[in-house]
Image 1 (cartoon, rainbow, N blue to C red):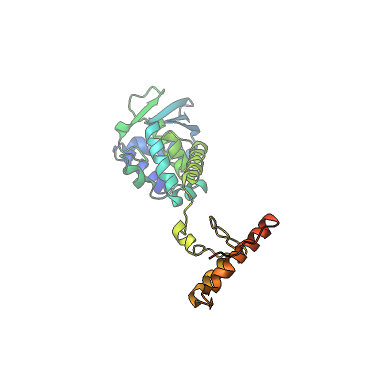
Image 2: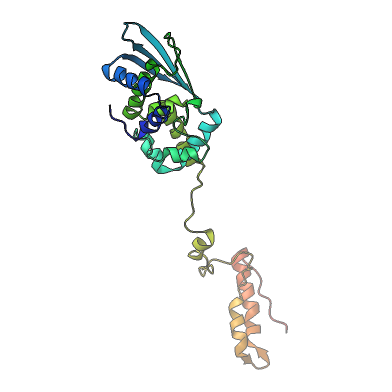
Length: 256
């Protein structure tokens, strides 16, 4: 029975109890297939073990499940790291998951027998008994076959965890404001500038004057006798301009 890194901590902790004979029999029971069934649920593992005397005994191994608050923190941390989310959604546990848990004061596996509650309905007085140790070895094998069973034992099944991670990812995506690669001032640089108007388009608020052209001739100081040419023409331009607008008008001589 091979032991990979996932089960190593768990088995090492149990074998540190130095109950050599009991664990030797438990390994033999596990290898011989005496563990007829093993069920993993939130914090409790239940196993049926066939004894050498032909009796079947029920063994239970309980570990404290992570609290709802602990799971909420774990899920947020896992969803924020793309590499964690990608591995979990692909069906693999991140190799450094235990390090992440340790940052919250948690551990993937129980660190001592005090963190476990073991019970067996066999008549033996010693706990863990050979039935419980056999169940522990088969449990470790399940951890290696499907590491998500470790998390199920700690209170969160595979499907539930993956669904929570998907929800977190969707929520985070919705709350990320779209970035503006070009600020408004930069965008307006390419459109800002003086307004270009056509010859026939008056500026807003401007008053159209038919004699406006004569303003440009004032600088020339053209005269006829004692009269300024622009003064003589200005009345004519204004009268003609009024005539275009009103449909007619009277030309009055300049009495200057």
